Image 1 (cartoon, one colour):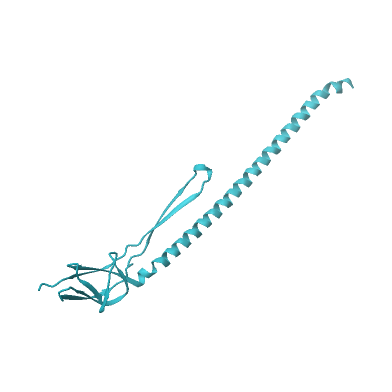
Image 2 (cartoon, rainbow, N blue to C red):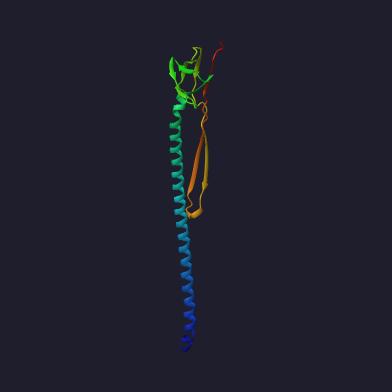
Length: 174
């Protein structure tokens, strides 16, 4: 019996080491499971953020396309009168044309310049759609991580050059 008592401290030590190792192994397994859960959660959040981004992008593109539609159905007319003291008439109606031009439905028009001395000149023009090209889109996306937010901010730009119908009305020589 004394031999068993003498081995008791060794047995307690071996038992304690086994318990410690088992506990450490369980903690590592728990940490691995926790890491996998966190990675899975991050992946789901990333997928959700990507879905939201593309939904926002789609909404923005459709909104812009609706905004550009009038420029596909109408034309932009710019008229220059030389000398500038002449009045402008479109189909016999007196008009004032802004510097950026006047939007008119697509079609044929008679544009006339009339000066104070009675001189006049007319031109028949066909007004074409102001937007004749396909809209080109540019996406500028960047990741902002300052402040720890990690928010993705995007700037969506488009290039839609308008093609005006330019009309120059020059006073005839008397």
